[in-house]
Length: 550
Image (cartoon, helix red, strand yellow):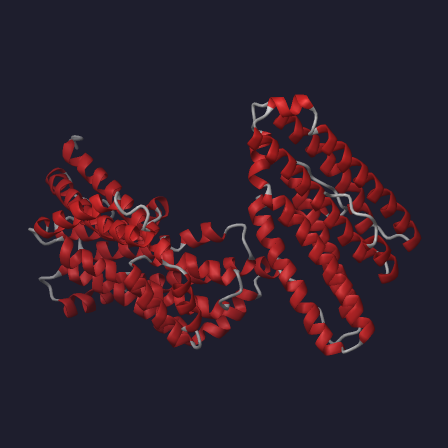
């Protein structure tokens, strides 16, 4: 086959289509604010209602990817239950077929330029005059993206028309191979809508059989679920569970359709009419998602329970073996706080390129192998679990001594979370200092990368190695004095003339802020260890120690 200008039209059309889809998703994401999220939260009182809400929202926003990613975020934050999230996802998969219906009914009609060109021109120009009005700008961006999408179809049709004269696209005889091709292509371009457009175009030009086009669509429906896997990778377990659920929905349904592909195609073609293969293909996609909804919606409670018990999910939550009414509940919470404090210290050290060896590396390897952002997200979830579980134990026990001990443990976890937050606040500054060509900023990073493990390593040894209370008090007292001395020394070093002359006003401000946040993290982590290791009277004595961060 000779490579010609028409072949480039197909590639250009696909590129324009991808650009249009990404632009539409971006504008939709900006428009999806608080009201949208409140609607999702409100409409999840039961499975059927949640599925209907997902369908409506995806149909309006024209992007199941955006809807699913927002659902994923709300699920990870605990706003939505896993069951509600899965129901919303099933509905969103149906709603996104509206985009295919629009393409089938508008994109393959001639003469659409007469009304698309004015929309393209007006919306494109107004994009540049509404920068101070984000709401209007997003609306015009959405309109411009939709018109660009229609023009991309014209490019694809034109290029594919020439391609057909030179070769046939019926390169696979087996529908299963077509499905694999659709899966691989969708995974590569991260948009099942592109595969749908190519299948519709090939079918419109009689390049592939209806059965082959349907197989391509099935592969695309599986491939599009991989986007959620990428989004959930390294995040909280419930996000992984949602991504896995969405994947299983489409894999199981696609397997059923592939096994009975000939019969399914015959039924759909009969309903749509033999003269309307393009409409029949969109109807096939819609039927696929409707069948998926019918298959899984009644079983969502059991499916959500099964996914929640997966090792990859349970490993990132507090052990379900904790008995709230058992005599060991408080001790078990204490162990979770010990683990949480250790993880916070590891996050702080990892932010400066250091790795600790607290003695249980295998248990914590799953945490240390994640990125800093992923570690921080897990710390927030873990802290919330400790807080919630301590409240539940307090309600069950109703004992003053137990309540006092739980307060101390929660205070320890809270301080450890504050320590992680201090480092998170200067994450970008740390990155800039590490890569800076300015020797003063780079040397500040080098100095901090030595101070951080020098402080955290002995503190981790205290937290994870059993010892007597008196020894704890002595070692913690020495650490506190060393911390105060180090803070004063580093502060003085930043106020000398060579430093002030070697950096700008903004840079010296960043250096001073980073120094404060680092030592604030040290102080918070230290007091977390105090609350964890000492009895209440001894811990109170440390709380009354003179402050040193000014």
